[in-house]
Length: 542
Figure 1: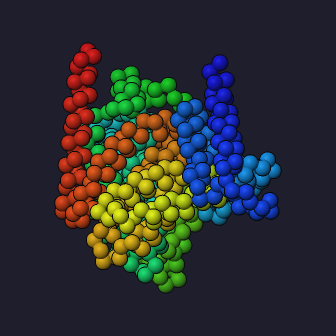
Figure 2: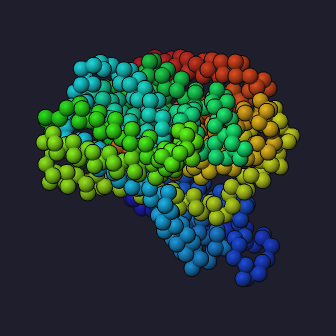
Figure 3: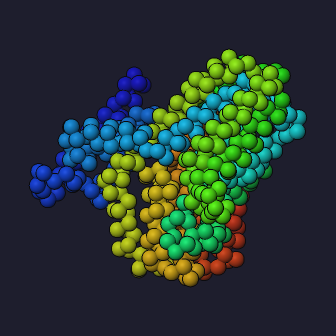
């Protein structure tokens, strides 16, 4: 009966879209039959596919079918409800085109190689050895969480790399400390994009810099860092949660089960059973640390190589011009070869065991690959319907009248756009050029607005169930994806609310010495108030 209900909900979504589409077509102006342009192009309807996908994912707890329904809805709107056009656009220009994109393929190869490496490290006993070492040196749940945060901050090169690396290294540590997988996924996600967006040497800095045409992109990025309230306040919140033990929302249930009952999954499927089946008892900590260290170095070299460093470019220019997909793919491939040779020389694994781990590692990444493919395809649907241009027109038409409140407004728009499309980089590309068109680089308010673009984009990306970073944080923690989204959403919204008020202050007084301390103080006050309210509630229930 429950399964039937889950099937009925997506069908209702499709029927609702059909009905709304028919009404919209009736109101639209008639066009020539030969015209291929969608009647829903650059209208509010262009945002309908991601809205339906996100809504269904949260209702049904089933992300694959929800994303697929969103893709089909996008195809229907693009083709003006033509059956043939829907199938052609959804599959040929959506799913197939996303898988044929060179950048996306590079990320998928990187994912597969990381899955294989994680399987190798587990089979060699490196993860188990690190867990034993950590259990001797990290004695508390707070220490395990702080260690996870510290590692996430240190791996600031790229969010994809951050999610999977921190997950594979810290899972044994947090498991030993009875920290739920949902909490681990939050810590990974909150130290991925929010850290990369305030790191000058990162793929995110390169992406933001590329949107400034006069060559001052990196300088603008550095100036905007102190005003990136969402990223900075997220770090403040994580440290506060780790030190005080404050938990609220759905996360509280997961952490209570983990702490009191040792149930780190809280009813979720144990996604790491296969990885832990045949761990080698002779593994050493070095069997985990060395491959990770080589991976970091190799990925940095791969990224500056893709940016032309070995062709004469400076390190900064090479990193700014780097292709994260190529760099991460090449770096991970080199690391895999070195890791295999190292394990063979150590005689910790046989060649047969290594060969068997390759398909197993691939299989461990299939859920993440499937979700990423659908998420990219859904983004292609919204792009083809002109969702970016629709939001851009809204911003341009209303920007002039709200100058002092523009940072807060841009923050909200960036949150909404990034949440709906699941991409922060695409949000940068829309809003940063608009902001620079309104304010010159010499205007302090312009720097605040650019930072609001980046903060809002990261916030929406952090919350969105169709974001690739959110998907890979789930994969890194080996946590159910919908559970991860539901448990981290209250935390992200808390920081977003405080950031909104901080941007109001920054718009009125564009001075970081005023706005940033205000934001930090407001964040701490909100958390202390939450702790008191929740403490009273628990006392009343006892």
